[in-house]
Image 1 (tube, one colour):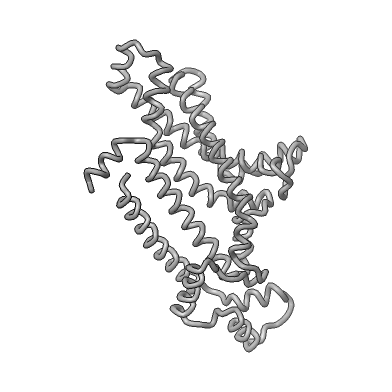
Image 2: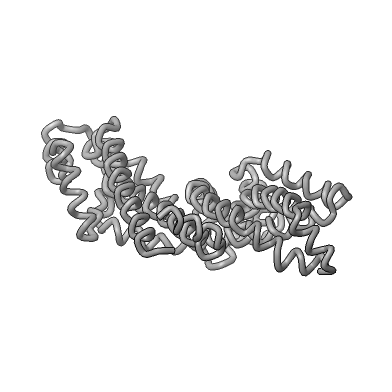
Length: 317
């Protein structure tokens, strides 16, 4: 991939990031509810609110300026690496993010790995045993898995392994064992799409002309599968994994709340409840940057894996 193409993609990503920042700030700025009032009520639920006190507190928080003034200050802070200070805790947003990111990133990476291992394994087995009893069992698993909401599966596994069998912790974070159930829920939920994609791509490739030619030359089925077919289905699987990673970010918000994990999603929900303006803006903007980074990495991976993509981009330039 040429350097110009990489620079072009980075510029496109930067423009998209600015548009996302404007959109995030607009939604928060024009959403109903005064952050100063909500925080005062959070600190003293039984006390009455004086309009002058609310106005003074809003001035202290810096939420009483007009749209462009506040957006300019926020954007200038981001460019300096300052995402603001949490109204609730008084700590920098970046500090709040980094102290909770480890739990969420671990959850996402382990879930993606589990989904990939289960999805590829069952997808290959379903293809090799097409229309046999094993294929029917896998198809039933896929349909069942896609029909069951992840929060229901989370509660079911919680009841079985934590409450009935006492094998795994039910709430909070106490090391790796606390991640087993959340990873199982998210990984199994997203494995179904990989199973279907793997089987669909394998069926198409195994009936194509190049596989017939390879068989005619005497290559074994395992050699054809490993050296030729699996490489050809890598692109759609990588795309699907990239899409799943972005979906996992949303899914982790629900799962972290059910299992009480101290991750980004759990903290973001609490920030929304008290309208902690800098935390919500900072987290959503970083999430958006993360999703754009994943898409950029997927695009770059295409060019490394498939020479046809490289040739097409070079011809286009």
